[in-house]
Length: 392
Ligand code: FAD
Image 1: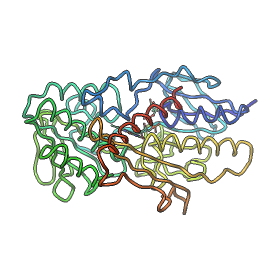
Image 2: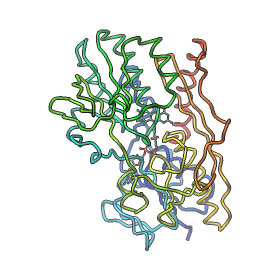
Image 3: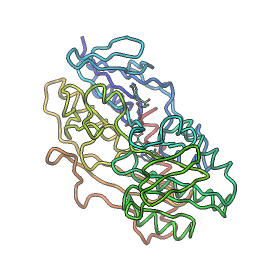
Image 4: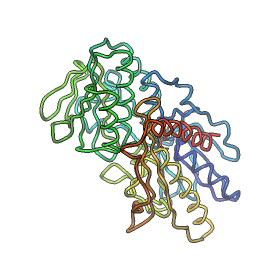
């Protein structure tokens, strides 16, 4: 019988990996386990919040997964001894190798006052779907002159530039529709991805509208009160009209259940094969993995998934896996026609995925308007390209 590789999670990482495995090697039986029948993408969901885009543009199906056994169930447990996955309906699937790509869970235990019920009042919108629409509707219902508060977590978390792109696009909406309003970012960090580019753009496009409060100025949110929409920091509290609480995160629950997450909540991996440092035979890709300098992005998830698929195919043939070189680019929109980006190249070094010095870069600080316009077009092109590669 053909060896079976089971992939858990049909997001950017898992769907890419399943497809790459099926393409690379017809001798492998590939099973993809994903509970949802459609996938709602986070990239560009900040544009939905600002009323610039509909949810249909974020939604993808699983029709084009020929040659892959697709099971719309949730993986509930992994028996690492017997190499077997238990689904939530009690079915078992045996595997020769397992790829885990469950993405993130919001770590409700890490922020007092914040839980699933509080998220219905102070949405995180860090998993795209109903939460995105809830936050969008709250922004639409807010009176002019209101205060929007975004809380951003410490590193590492999904999409490092994401909170700041979100602040930018919400500011665009406020400037256009509710110009007396203001936006405060309470941050658990003293700096953030593409900071000088974001700050220069905010001065130019949204003067006086966005206030960023770093860790050292009391930005870290230590507790929230959904009843009053209050965010408490070490230096005082902020009452919001609309509160977007982006809490600390960790690898999806199945990673903890399989024993591949460590005390940080993330999954340490070998940077060549993406095999877990904690459980042989299980590989982890995408946001759930932690393997060095690579940021948690859809671009990274896709790149890691393809490298992992090649390594898994090699290992099943008892061949030496190749040393991968991985690229990440993260575009952010500061306004609908104003894009900025950061790119990096990563390769295994000292047991981690390390950045190749001098190979990456960010958009120039002094670029002309047409360059920013072009980057906004490239962002859209990137999204179209990656989603058609991953979801067909
Ligand atoms: P996910 O995409 O979350 O997929 C995980 C899948 O696993 C889900 O479909 C889930 O249903 C499934 N799953 C979970 N548990 C189980 C289980 N037990 N059994 C079976 N299936 C399970 N990245 C970029 O590159 N560019 C951007 O511009 C960008 N913008 C972003 C903006 C925002 C606001 C946010 C929040 C994120 C953004 N990202 C961006 C980051 C990107 O969305 C993530 O890095 C990416 O989705 C990670 O892919 P993943 O497959 O690891 O996780």
